[in-house]
Image 1 (cartoon, rainbow, N blue to C red):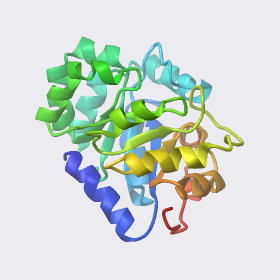
Image 2: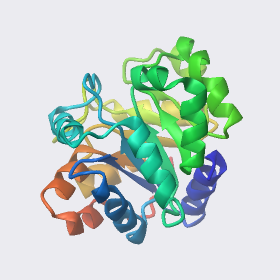
Image 3: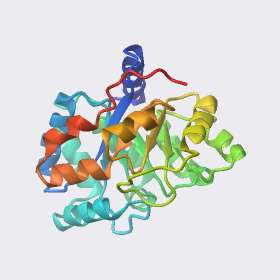
Length: 261
């Protein structure tokens, strides 16, 4: 697999006049053996791609639900290397694009070159490193590029215009548009300016723009995706898998083929 697989997945969604739906799951929540079952289920219900979180002891971007899932995974002894080995062993069965979400420290500890090579071998298409600023990308971007992996950048509500322009310039895979100020987690509402914020990013971005952080209902997914190319849903998915209510994940899809603004 490669970053081209991710591009093709988004193109397929757009060709159907639909919006992308990318669930986030914590690798190893319930033990590493649960990961394949979760991915196969998501694949079966038709998600665009899957974002897999790597448990980390200092998850600065994660809200309480994902933090707790990370603690459960760490208690099972889950590591970045273990996740990549596991994905490599099961990659024939997983046909949806896989995006890894990890913090910079585990990547540096692993070694950027080895991390990129092993991610490629594991069938990963893209990588999100939320605590790595644009200015420090060079530490890993060359290794990822060499292994045909997309480095997915984040834009926040507080990013000034010139910053947004820098982030979108040369963006790969998709832009992760953070729709709340703060950490991940379920929200009941969004700020009034989120629509214009998403439209501004979309106007500049050469790649799809996906809204994430706080999306916890189909209504929110529908509303946000009116102004961009789709949504990423994290805490709610993690919670539903943890409670054994995975059938409810289908209800979060922004099914309506809404026209882009």
